[in-house]
Image 1 (cartoon, rainbow, N blue to C red):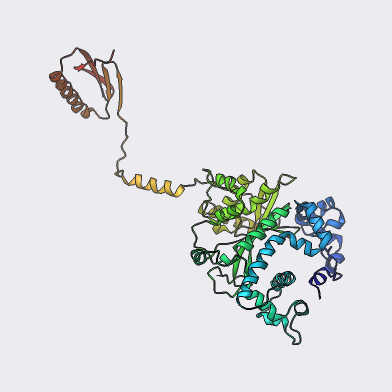
Image 2 (image 1 turned 180 degrees about the horizontal axis):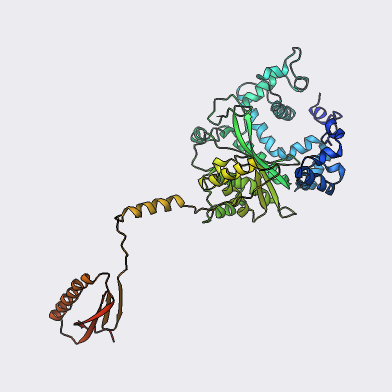
Amino acid sequence: MDIAVLLNADDGADTDWCFEVSDTEEGEPNGTEGAEGDDVFNSESTAGALPPGERRTGNAYVDGIIHDSGLHIIREGQVKAAYEERGELGLFSLFFTREFRDSLHRWTNEMLKEKGKPEATVCELDAYIGLEIAMSFNPVTEIKELWSQKMFMGQSDFVATMARSRFEHIRARFQVHAPGSVPVERREQDPLWHSRRLMSQIQEKFAAIAVPVGAVSLDENTVRTKARSSARTFMPSKPDKYGVRFYSVVGWESLYAYSVWDNGSGNRTQTTPADRYVDVFPALRSALFRTLDRDDVCIKRKDASALWIAMCGHLTKTYPAPTQHRLLVCDNFYTRHNLAKTLTTFTDGEMKLLGTVRIGLQGKWMAERLEASKARIDNAERGSWELIAALDVPVDWEKLQEKHKRAQKKFQHTGRRRTFRQQRQLRTRATSFFATRKPWSSTPTIWQVLLRRMYCLGILKRQFSYVVVLLRYGGGLETRSCTEKRSRYRP
C-alpha cells in the first residue's frame, strides 16, 4: 500500500470541535446562576461580546483571549500550494525539504552499504520518518510490540507500511550528520550531538513558516527515553520521570510549536544556551545581548532565563502583533518579576506575562509581602483581589552589601558618639585659613607651618608677604602672624 494513500486517507472525523455542554449546566435555573457572586455576574454579563458560536468557556476574558489568538502564515502562498498539490505530505515537505532529505538518504545509504544491507529508496526513507513520528504518540515498551500479531496488541498501519526487520535495519544506520564530520571532542561534550542538525532544521522551519499571535504558552516538554545519556533527567513529579527536557513556546489557539529547544542538561561545551540559540538565529544576537547588558536587567547571558527571553521574544522580532500586544501564559516555575520585566524590555512593551506565582522564586525582597497578601486573600471573600507592586533592587546589590559591611568594620564603634568635621583649606594669594576640629589641635598646626616656612627661608631668599592664620576657638577667632614665601609664579 502506498504511504501517500495512508496519510491522505480521510477518517471521517470533524476537525471543528468545541466543548460539550454538560447536563447540569443546561438544567440550572437562572436564580442559581446569579447566586454565585461577582465572578459569575462578570462573566455572564460580558459574555455577549462574542457570538454564541465562539463562546467556549463561558468566561468573557478567557474567550476574548482565545478569540484574539491564532496563527499567522508567513509563507501563505507556499503553504497553500504545497497542501493543494500533495495534502499532508506537502505540508510535511515544508519542514523536511527535499535537499535535507536527500542528504539523509545519501548518508544513510553509505552506512547501509558498508554493513552489507540493501540501500533504502526515497519512499522507504519517507516511510521510516513517518513511522518514527507515529511512534512518538504510541507509548509502547518495545518496538516489536507495534508489529505484534497478538490480540489487543500491534498497530495495523505499522504492519502495512513497512516490515519490522527493514525498519530496524534503517533505524540502526540512519544518519543525520555526514559520517565522520563531528569531532570526537564535540561528541564527548554534547550528549545530543547526533541530533543537532535535525533539531536546527526543524527549529528554523517552524520559525520561518508561521507565527502564533495573541496568547502563547511557555512550558517544558519531555521526550521520554531509557537511553544512558547525560541529557536524560529525572523528575519524579512528571508522568514521564526519565526523559530529555525541552523548552517549548506554543500557540494557545493553534497549538503550533513555534520554538522548541533543549534545556542543555549534560552539555559541557563552553557556550551558553542563549549563545546556541542565536547561533541558529543570528538576527537576534545584537538585540538580545544589548538587552541583557543593560544596567537595569538582572538576567545574565548564562542564565536559563536568557534562553526563555530569546524564545519568547523571537515571535515579536519575526512578526509584530497587529494589536501591538501579546500574552505569555506560564506556570509558577516561569512566573518571575525579572523575567517579565526583561521580556517587556526586549519586545518594546509588546509581550506581557501572566501566570501563577511560586513565592520562593520571587526573591527575598518580595516573599514577605506576597506571604502577607496571600494570607489576607485566604481570609477574604470569594472574588477579592490585591495588587502587589514589585520591588526593583540594584543588579549588584550583593556586592554593594558586602562593600558596605567591609566599610563598617573600619570604624571604631564606641559608646560616645562624636561629631566629625572635615578639615577645610582655602587659599587666596598668600593668605591661608585653617579650620580645625578642636582648640588644642591648633598649636601643632601653627608650629608645623612655622617650621616649614623657616626651612623655606634657609633655602631661598625671596620676597615674603604677611600671612594671617585664623584659628577657630569655640565661639571666637584668634589672629596670629607668620611669614610665608610668595611663589615666583603666583601674581
